[in-house]
Length: 168
Image (cartoon, rainbow, N blue to C red):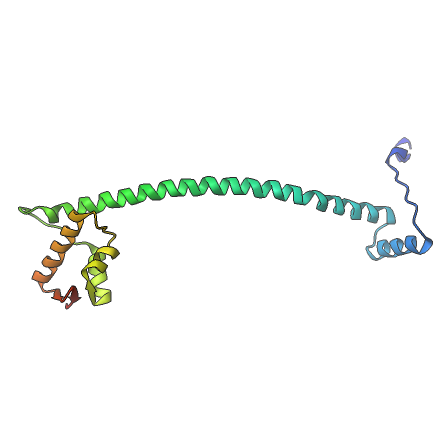
């Protein structure tokens, strides 16, 4: 029976401002199907939990901001690497087109063919822009020009003014 003795250090006493005030609390507890003491504890605990939640959210938001910054920096670095790799790949694929005495097979740029097919007529600067060839990449531009000439010799495209038209 010693375990049934209430611990007096756990009690809190509340003095209500009026009887109707206490009755209002009792009605709210009855509506929640809970004794008044448990009802009050739940309400106060939920308030305290809500009180600390903004602080936790602020810490979490700051941690997410730091992580976001780090991920953005990592993405920027990887984007630079991807751009460099793509430029190297374009130079590698265009190398056979820049050799005057090349023998063997040369691969056409699939993006070039797709561009010409879908648009019908495309001017030279747009072709270079769409293929990602910049003004300072003259060797790549020369390779694209030679591919266009090869496609024209094959009868797939025709030169019209400042551009090329798909004719196949």
